[in-house]
Every structure is written in structure tokens, then in C-alpha cells.
Image (cartoon, rainbow, N blue to C red; front, side, top):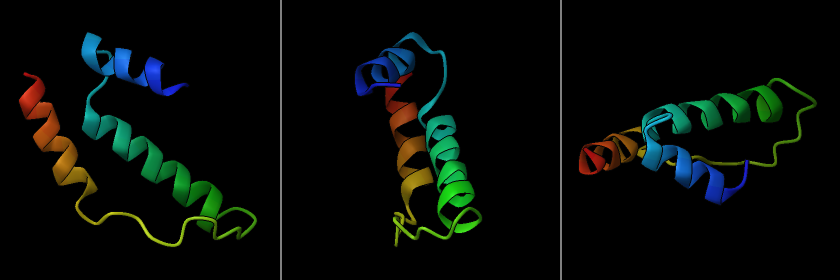
Length: 60
């Protein structure tokens, strides 16, 4: 999905920021760590979920 599509989905309430972050973190785990060991992502933001939750609260 494009950034514009993701933004629209958030605005329309199709999914939350937390759901989006969880989906991307899961995908990073699947492809980067459990897949062909690309290690293209070396670090993720440890505060990503709490920041996403704060954004969800702002959007309400």
C-alpha cells in the first residue's frame, strides 16, 4: 500500500496506528529475521507501539 492509502485508512478508521505498527513489525520479523536473513533492518524504534497508541488517542 502507498503512504497515501495508509493515511486514508487511518483517517477512515479502517485500522489503527497500533495495528499498522504491529503489522510492519511482524513483517520485519518474518522477512528480515526469519526469512533469508537479509538483516536489512538493523534496528526498530522500541517506542513505536507507545507512540502509535498516542497517535491513535489524538485521532479520537
